[in-house]
Image (cartoon, rainbow, N blue to C red; front, top):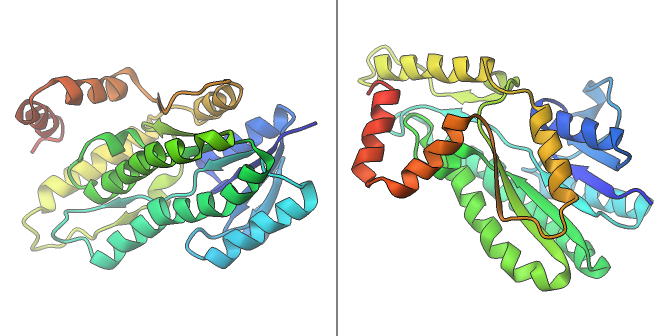
Length: 267
């Protein structure tokens, strides 16, 4: 009997790659999009869900339960990017990033958990980011929203383990997706004291995405995780230097690591 999978944010990028790959492996996959009627050419069923609207989360989950009787795997992938100096980024945009990347993910978890507890089985995979392991200049809000999700995963994992549910994080580095078009960019203000450094870093971020890895690597890692009896808490998928940066942050004095980052970002 095919396992039932729910993948949020599956209309493009990493989410679409995961949903497509799992459906090709024989899983019954439901992907989500805020506007599924506008999407075409999917090998899985696409349903409406907006993580900022709790009623759409409940409706989507209920519809899957009514059709299938269960949800075995949740891939919490929906998220947005945000860039800009902390001083100049609108606080409302900061809240929107946390509401999407953090609270939205939590609301989906809270909605599926009662069903997973009842069936005494479930796997929840939260898509975080290697950027969530460190405060990156001009990406502080994105980094902190993903870092917060990492820690909540650790806590919730311990709370639900006795119910037969595993919760893990998977942190991607730079991948070749259309995230740039969906990222909130704080404007480059003419009189900004951050203008030159921010512009240089925007160009660097975009270049990293353009030369990023194929999202299929994330899909393959998710497939491996859900077929692992006792999965780890944290997984990282990215370039060698991206993953090694986490090790360096752990072993180097704070000011040394800060200097490395500032040199890399030319600050």
